[in-house]
Image (cartoon, rainbow, N blue to C red; front, side, top):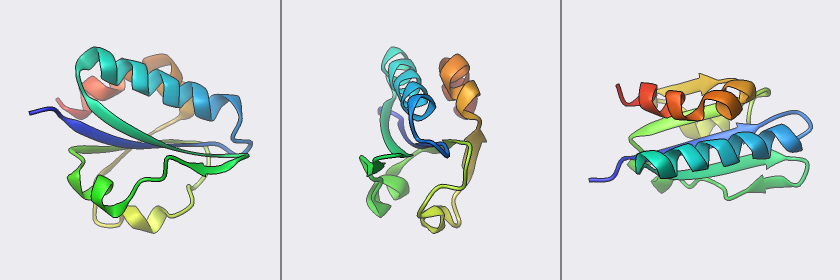
Length: 101
């Protein structure tokens, strides 16, 4: 069965780093055969918003953030793996592998 990950990428400006991190995580997930849905929070608001169903069905939750994301209460009671945006950009594959170790 395919593993499912949900992620939030968010930074104060919500420009390059948010989307670079999202792209990096998406690419790594594709390589590893992991299903991923990534919500971005940035200058243009929330895109690809995670639903409570997405969160409940996920095998892992990653927050690649530089700020507290909007709607953080959605993740209460779940284990969240928090990384920096830089880590997500540079080490996405290692992060996904580590989450499932």
